Length: 359
DNA sequence: GATACGTGGGA
DNA sequence: TTCCCAAGTAT
Image (cartoon, rainbow, N blue to C red; front, side, top):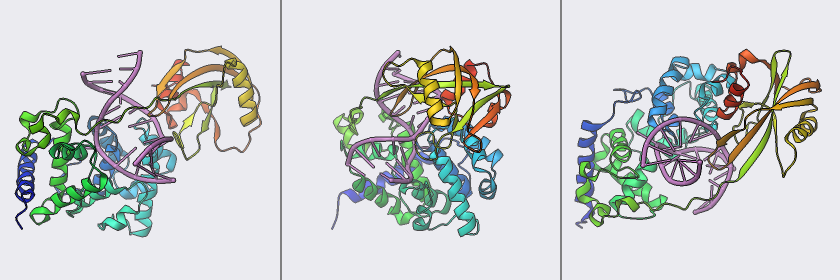
């Protein structure tokens, strides 16, 4: 059987590798013989995060946690603090748990078996494929947003299924005897990131434009098709800047959910048109047994999360009475020591408004 | 399969 | 200003 797809596939593979060898960006995690921990770290940091952001944070992270052992030994709060500002904080919590599993269950050696590695927290199909191929030279495919876009355009398919994408990526990485799987996978992603971009792709610089169905049809900008955005809800949160004897009250958020495990100024969701101070005093009493004296309001801080828009309304407060002894999730923090805590961006902004050591 | 989950940069 | 988006994972 002489399938016409075969020569095209082989030609694409070779063109892609040649292009990658010449045009690949010089990124700190691209080392001649990569340390699995470093590859893993870079892949987790890169999840939904721009390369330029990761460049800087990757270096800083390795200065603080140079090895898997160093990270495994670190305290959870320290790890979350190191991740501050990167977002999707479950990544940090999962990575920390995962390296401890590697330390305890694999004698500190990252498993080179895809099934075993895939069971670790925070390791999905993409990350498993990336680490296996890049760090261990195993012919495992990756499908990320770049690969999805590149394949959708090659096939001029507006909505390729996950099953088809993984199948096609798998065939490509296993072709040619499965040689250079890490380079092939990165070539596919690099092409999507630098040439086959979401908007205004540089088809004239593309090594595989000749076999691209979307380019032939002129539909590259419309592949893959965009989903229509849904409206995001808006919350208002009355927030207490509760100062007492030179310290501010901080609370740790629950481990699960939005900003899990991060610290913040205590606050309550504002419903309907209740007065901010009244609602805050009432809420803090109900939730934490805190009796506060609300004072001046500061300028509101608006923040856009992925699926939620929040307007924080900070209120300077004094303390009348407290009754939360023994609650480890509430702490008095000296105002000049707020840098020691892992705070989300909007919380830092409110701290800065109050003249504390925010950034 | 759909939804929750952060942040900052660019158009 | 507003919207889109960036090397995904867990549920």
